[in-house]
Amino acid sequence: MADDKKQDIRQAQSKQLETQLWKIADTLRGKMDADDFRDYILGFIFYKYLSEKMHSYANTILKADKITYDEVEKHKDKKELLAAIKDEALDKLGYFLKPSELFSELARRGNAEGKSKFILADLSKVLTNIEQSTMGSESEEDFGHLFEDLDLTSSKLGKTENDKNELIVKVLTHLNEIDFDLKNTENDVLGDAYEYLIGKFASGAGKKAGEFYTPQQVSSVLAQLVTIGKTKLKSVYDPTCGSGSLLLRVAKEVKDKNILFYGQESNPTTYNLCRMNMIMHDVHYKKFDIKNDDTLERPQHFDQRFEAIVANPPFSAEWSASPLHMSNDRFAAYGKLAPKGTADFAFVQHMIHQLADNGTMACVLPHGVLFRGGAEGHIREYLIKEKNYLDAVIGLPANIFYGTGIPTCILVLKKNRKAVSEALEDRANNVLFIDASQHFEKIKTQNVLRAEDIAKLITAYKNRKEEDKYSHVAPLSEIADNDYNLNIPRYVDTFEEEEAINLKAVTKELRTVDEAMQATNKEIAKYCKELGIDTPF
Image (spheres, rainbow, N blue to C red):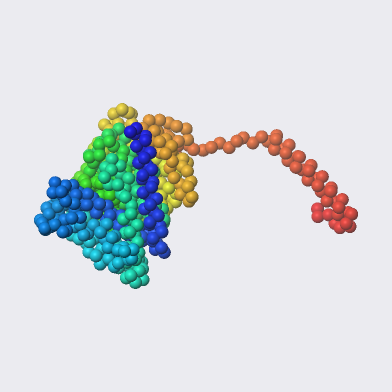
């Protein structure tokens, strides 16, 4: 089958699944906030995914014994069979579920004979058992506390226990009717649908959305920037990984999928969502290492170096800026720390520390990092003048991130620019500026980068050419002349000249208007005289 036809079928399947899942999420949440219901619906989809993977894998193992996993519970060698399956499942899948703990079985029991049966206690026990099945195994950290945000006792699910149970049974029943098509290993339809749901919830979550989700079009730009010229990557790292969408996007840009994912996330709920997202995209638990902690205060991958780094750190977040950090290898060489109230450059310094010598990093930051003075100005100058790490500055449109309308930029940095860019030997002597701020489509209240906008931006970065009102290649001397201020309008002139005014035509028009007014005044004066009243002028 032609690649285009395969792609069309895949997109149609993905769209159908996305529509089905969102319909369940949107109709069943009732009055519950989308942000609250997110954890339940995504958690249950994840549970169904784990169940189907377990069911399929167990059936494969049992094929030689000519029995199915559903038949094991009544088999005379039940205990031995389950023990053997568990050992293999823990290594292959990273977790274990008994036949009686499968999603389909809970959904069946909850909706027996078309009536809701009480299953909350059973469900809670199953979710706990999934986590506990990994204890003492290599996957323990990757599955630990994954379901802690699925609070089945919460009043948000209903006032009474029966109300809560009825809602949960409805969700399980509807999800049970959907075919996740996990046998189709060529397509990642379910992973894409899961990503779609995360994005849909983010669009309704307001300010909180920025904590866990980077819009797909921005993820695409960052991913392409760090993979240009590469067909494979050893590793990719995101120090503020949120739901993991940015890490996963990078993998889509390279042909060789044998890539290791590393990330750190401080929010426990988002950390759980990231691990679920990894597993839902069929990333083996041995292929990702996601940590839950404060990246700036307690970095968890300090001694590792990564070939690609992408990030959308929280804009102008607060951090300790403790003097103790001045003895830390990430910050010591700069002589100054990022201000306590704006940690943007602290994240940049952290990422540079983690970047391999042959690597590329691309991160989204607020425009203030380009021109703010003080310690930030000092760090900016050091990065350019002393280290020559800055490769490109890209201005993005305002209002493309959920929860904030501020304009943002992307900084692209490389440690050894000359070696990394052999095809463009003079690349190390300049910085590319791109102003993509006016290239977007407005959809409802959000600005969105279109496919053509992204293509234009990436082409400009690859070619590193001057384009009127869009891009400029600035020699390092020009940046020095600007006192290392990187404000994009200093380098890319977007001024549009106004059309010249024809003064003769304007004068003629004014005379015509004046003559018309005089004629009107004469008419008014005539009527006033007939009425015997004074004129208004």
